[in-house]
Length: 152
Image 1 (cartoon, rainbow, N blue to C red):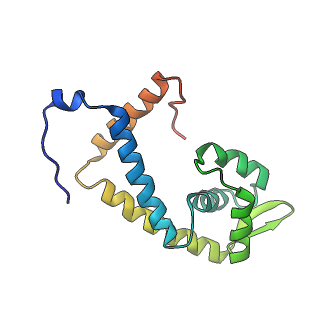
Image 2 (cartoon, rainbow, N blue to C red; image 1 turned 135 degrees about the horizontal axis):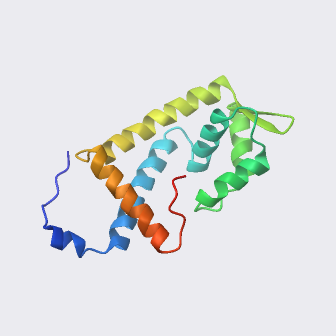
């Protein structure tokens, strides 16, 4: 476990939220992207696998692209992602609807395990109450600044 120096509440309250939220986001996203890269996946691949697994045969390319695009910070060509997963044999498309294959589900589960390892490292020394309070504070900051503070 990594240890950090203790600081007073006053010192912590004076810290810039933008710096710390960006630093945390960069580390979390970087860790997840590195874990997914071990399966030759990107985050958009991961999102696709999870959404299609959760609603087999229900998603069309345009509907899934519309759902995932707001989370994408890299201007992904989602059709290329769908084509890649299809070429791997992980995704099929029938009547315009997407479904995972057994290989796709196996890959999704491997990637989920890798992501779980990143989440476990991220949460070392942070109990559920602290984590929930952090998420709640961040979502309220987002809402206070005009964003959507509802959970995705």
